[in-house]
Length: 119
Image 1: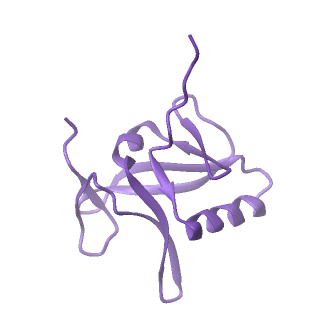
Image 2 (image 1 turned 180 degrees about the vertical axis):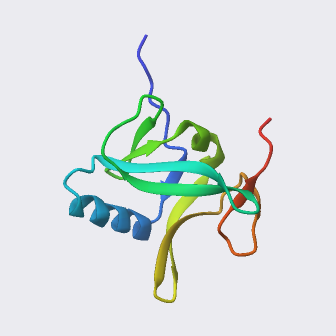
């Protein structure tokens, strides 16, 4: 039996891809980009983004448009069908998931999200 790799749970916008690639190129110790969730804010969850220097045993490693991405287990199902984008607001640039069909609400300041219950 051959092992079939599942497609990535989300897509990257061109601007997010360029932003992440630039950050990875600037850090010789980084082997990829890590995405996760943590409990925070008034809506309950916050996306986390960091350069990864190692693959953790529970991470799902995927390659998206040539970039190595490590997805923490709690985050994977919540990201299905979404797009990671670079959001520009004046002089500030932040990564954020847009068009995430799994979100049910965001707090007023946009710092945290609530997800629909999983079936």
